[in-house]
Amino acid sequence: MLEVTEDCTGCGICVKTCPFGAILVVDGKAVVQDNCTLCSACVQVCPFDALVLERKVEEKDLSGFRGVWVFIEVEDNGTVRSASLELLSKGHELAKELDEELCAILLGDGVHNLTGELGRYGATKVYLVEKPELAEYNTDAFATVIVGLITKYGPSIVLYPATHIGRDLAPRIAATIQVGLTADCTGLSIVDGKLLQTRPAFGGNIMADILSANHRPQMATVRPNVMPVMDPIDGPDPMIVFEDVTIDPGLIRVKVIERTRMDEPGVKKIDEADIIVSGGRGAVQDGKLEMIEELAAVMGAAVGCSRAVVDMGVKPKSHQVGQSGKTVSPKLYLVSGVSGAIQHLVGMKSSDIIIAINNDPNAPIFTVAKYGVVGDLFEILPKLTEAIRAEKGL
Ligand SMILES: Cc1cc2nc3c(=O)[nH]c(=O)nc-3n(C[C@H](O)[C@H](O)[C@H](O)COP(=O)(O)OP(=O)(O)OC[C@H]3O[C@@H](n4cnc5c(N)ncnc54)[C@H](O)[C@@H]3O)c2cc1C
Image (cartoon, rainbow, N blue to C red; front, side, top):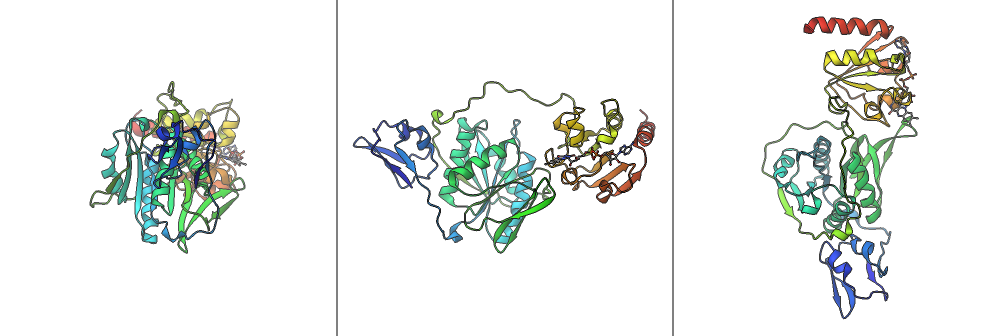
């Protein structure tokens, strides 16, 4: 509960900051109304520390929490990020099993045109908040609005993509409403009505199954490119719940001054490519991954690599596949000179077809490969590159 202490001077800063209009000043003191969502925006701005938010951790009746929610991330070009469609697809399955609603949380400015698409990926309801202050992602504003929505409507599950934004947003929300968060999940299912959250642990050597037994909502961030996207469904548009909130600019502590894209210009990204040609320590020659890059160029593929290659300073981290790099699921993953440590395998084993080349017949990479070639990559790759060049008439 939110309490107003004797230190309150009635200055009114909290009144203008509250996104839900839940505070009034009466007789020189702040008075909290029933529609307070406990979002804590007022606590953060009170100059006299006169607002105290106390959340009691106690056994609760969890049966009132219903609905599977997915946070929708919107790309700079105004489209829905594919990681959110993956989560809606998984959420669709979970909601069906729980016999609950699948809802999308859509924040932004001028994003209402996306609601139909969210419906085609299973959302039956969209909580829509449109404000100029939400045009760009901002931790304070997004977290405050979502905390308010969660407190008001009480979902049983909230899922976020484990992107830069999701990884920033979800922990702040979890800390504010004092619930757990399972980060970087690679699997989700329902067991006895609860969300079973699976993620790699102990350096990827074991998969840990995690349940939130006593608190709601159950919250998880989920790695992109792990959950398949469902075929779009035909059906009625989702119901839209318009939430009107006021966002005080004073609440937003981070100002975006400049944006710089870190992508290498003209270089295909591994998390978006259909074909990845990947190399490990065994493919590095004279500090380069030249044969891998040549083969990738003739195949129109992206270049991936193991962490060893990144640690050697041969490729930037944006090319790293695996647990501490990116998870990929291309149509074809052609990998040479990678031993197949578990931390690499978790990042690529869901690829449609894996072809591995290694001179060690016992290399673990062969356990996930559909086709395995035992031999010296420095002999095999140039021949393969030549053959593809000839085939394509290059
Ligand atoms: C917490 C944690 C997170 C990690 N995250 C990641 C991650 O995200 N991604 C990742 O990749 N690793 C990660 N690692 C590191 C991982 O454990 C391995 O050390 C790493 O994947 C090894 O890289 P590699 O296979 O390229 O090298 P190596 O294990 O050295 O394997 C090289 C392979 O090349 C083969 N080879 C050598 N010469 C030739 C040749 N001429 N022809 C054919 N084959 C040849 C060898 O037989 C060998 O199998 C992580 C480790 C930890 C502890």
